[in-house]
Length: 83
Image 1 (cartoon, rainbow, N blue to C red):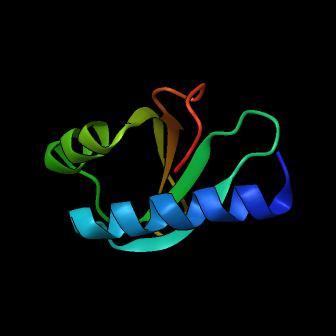
Image 2: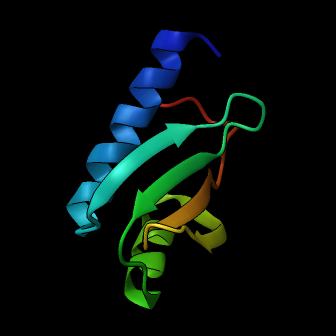
């Protein structure tokens, strides 16, 4: 995946995640897997359901030392091209 394509995809997901109401502290994409690492302070069942509705599947949640959460997400259908 090219750098521009990756940045466009991150930007697209960033906007959609913000629209749900999640306070994004950081959003990165793993090069090897294409999964997204979302850093936030709050994650609950409502947010998880909303992420699912926009096409992001929850893989894992870990707490960090600073009180933030590291949420690992994956696009549900990664074979379809992004708009």
